[in-house]
Image (cartoon, rainbow over all chains, first blue to last red; front, side, top):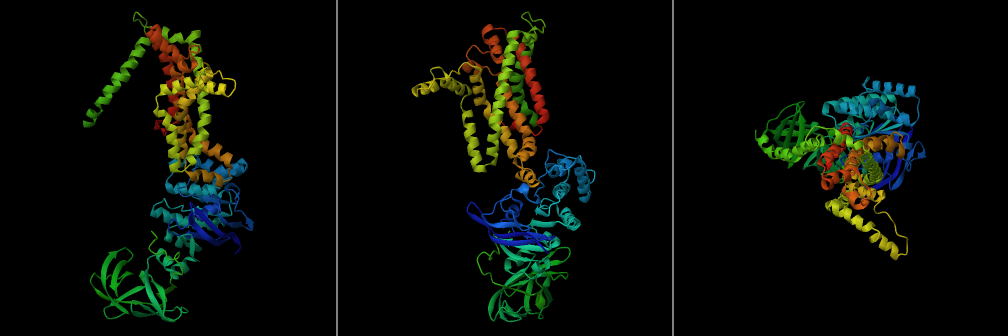
Length: 356
Length: 270
């Protein structure tokens, strides 16, 4: 697929504080790309630079081969859906949607057709003459999306658009957004701190922290093969353990040797090991690789969440089988489910524990 | 029950100091010296002398309101764009003169503008021709603008700073340039503030007699001066009250227009 946007060596600081440091990122045409990270990681600033609301200190924004770094927002071939909707409260829904088209001096009939089409697309037909204040949060967000897409942008920027909605509505809207993207064939850049949202919707996830890109990849890749402890910790629950790679396919964790599938880390190298809680298997006492005692049990609906004290580490375990507090259990992990990561090379990557 | 007892002092206050005086104004305004009902005091506004004073008061108040609006809007825009620390400091500076007595501030202008006043002395020392502004309509407008400008700035600033920055960004994002964004988004969204500001400047400007007395000399009579003189010099409370009622009706109409447009109550900020 063709590159639509190319961010080259972007840096930006506010009041002497570096928010984005030498960021390089490209977005392919028709991609649903999510910038994911904790607040203050630079994801929103990146989006604002794309939208034209901030100018980077250094670097270039290339859109379809043209440098648009200095272009004001109103001249850019893209549109933004803002956090908390940012509808024009003094205008009707129809006027809100027509705003961009009127500025471009489109004909009345064209505008009316577009309003009808956009409202149908977001399932709000007949809302033309309502005022934004009379709509629910979810409806307002749909209008904000409709207002952006009638301009037929090549790129739609979405800044935590579902942040203010409740869980059920948020899930519905996630499917809605995927449907919209597929129907319209627009490239989406989506900013969120919600890892579940990112995993559900994206083609590509860019995990950011402290102004650096931590990992770029598909949702599966990000979840199953996190490149460092930050990504592992931020995406889903995980057990992050210090380990020593004894040799290829053998890692020592908490004094016990586990078989794994990773190679190429060298011999006796200190590494970080990630094991997802659903991948930790609890077996009868005496079996398994290491022995522990169940210290907490919480019923979560789909599964039980347990904490097991073993070899001085509190293992987070998710299982449909319940082991009561105080039960002595063995722990075993399938070699495929042990993810080995290099120790953070720089302090900037060492961000674990600082995230929210 | 408790709440009713607590509100008693306020009720008493408003009865003694608001309702009774108001009723008295209406009583005097609608009766003649013998106590018989008459509309003469109200209709007296139609006489040349009175209608001229009312007309002049309206004209000067409208002029000062417009000047206040022209000065206040850009200032409010700048204020609303500053960050919290900066703007609270500038708002503070702006409100500071309001802590001084209104009379003192106006008297200060008199001292400044007099024929042998501070400004003319300085101009004379510099060898420049003096200005002759005291006792003119211009001086009255200057006094009104100076005294009432904060009442225009605050509601406009208040309504502008309530506009979500992203709403402005959204307009820009949808293709509007700076001027279009101002015209289609900022101006309509700050209209309640503008209306409040206009009322809060226009009403006191219309009724003032202090500014016109101190800066306008005795030659320029506004409706406020006429009413004041009926009470303090001529001693005709009936006529003074009658003219007050006319002015009051004028203001109430003005307030009603405001109430319809200013639903968010920006004007209640002060």
